[in-house]
Length: 187
Length: 89
Image 1: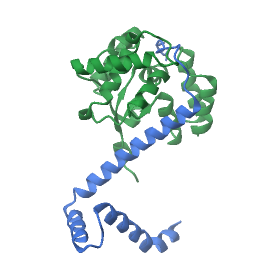
Image 2 (image 1 turned 90 degrees about the vertical axis):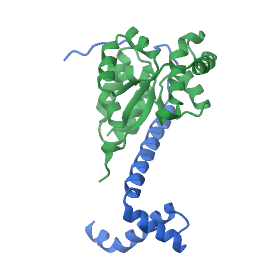
Image 3 (image 1 turned 180 degrees about the vertical axis):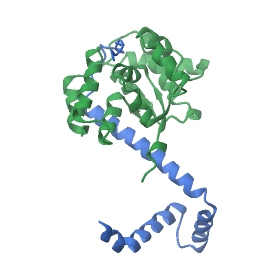
Image 4 (image 1 turned 180 degrees about the horizontal axis):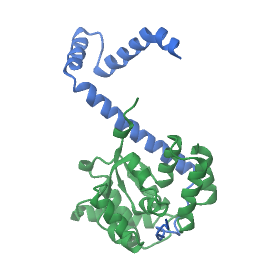
């Protein structure tokens, strides 16, 4: 029998996927597949702003979420360039690059070789386009839910309920997207 | 239990498509398989007797590299055990 417990990977995580996990109360799904989530220092303020500061601090105490070291001057410059490119995407809802610095910093963290991140968790379309251009491999919260469905951990009803909870709290998952995950991956 | 409401992240962001999600599931699955491959390779190669067998096979010229030796060894084992495996199904 495969030692599935050991087969977890290390990732960098933008704010959105973790917020979705908090919204539906299923951080355990992230813990099922990931050893550790690295986040950029600038993301902490975003979690506070969304009312999830306490939840984040709990995960940092557990050492499941790790706050990456502050960006160097070169990395900050790199993050600004990435944020400008995200802001310039047609799918970006915010033309001000400063609004995209947290996801740009998450990408810089994901690319640090010493952290050995195999993926970046990223749900925002404009940032995903830039991440792919940068050669990063991406997944997101609905992707984790889909994989959990394939593994028999979630039924069709579970998936509809979980993504529906995120949607009810304002996360931008369409009904069509939710039904796709339900039908393609639910058991 | 009443669940705490948490504000969405970028609620005006463009929507992900079904194709995005399919790619995400495939990427995650690929990363997990790579992790599994690393674990198996590490655990196998940490065994000194296995390292010795691999070295002997490479020195004999029977296999070009370690990957080929392991893959061929598994295929041979599978063929050898196939009557028993068929019987147990």
